[in-house]
Length: 101
Image 1: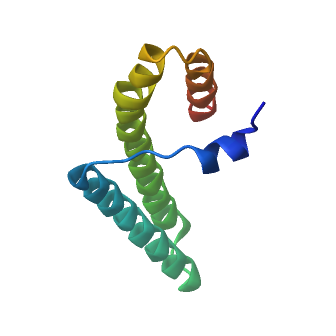
Image 2 (image 1 turned 180 degrees about the vertical axis):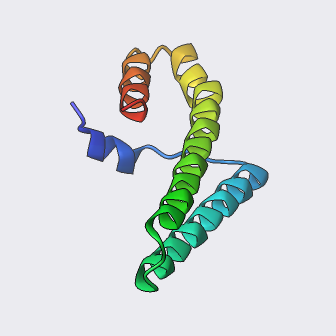
């Protein structure tokens, strides 16, 4: 039985150039937001201002996860089910459970 860590590193997903670019752009914006929050802390910004920016990062990550999960279900999960891979639904349930914490 493979562990979750092994699964993460063994399986791969080919994405279209447009999908890849969209994901990288989203992550780059989030990365910039996090750097901005770090600067705010370094500059002793007011706590509520930092919290508002932190909430924006959380919302951006949730949006990223939603897009990624939707793509995963529409492609990887559907393909695995069609190929008779029985563990795919259980894996999906575990992932969704972690996302909902």
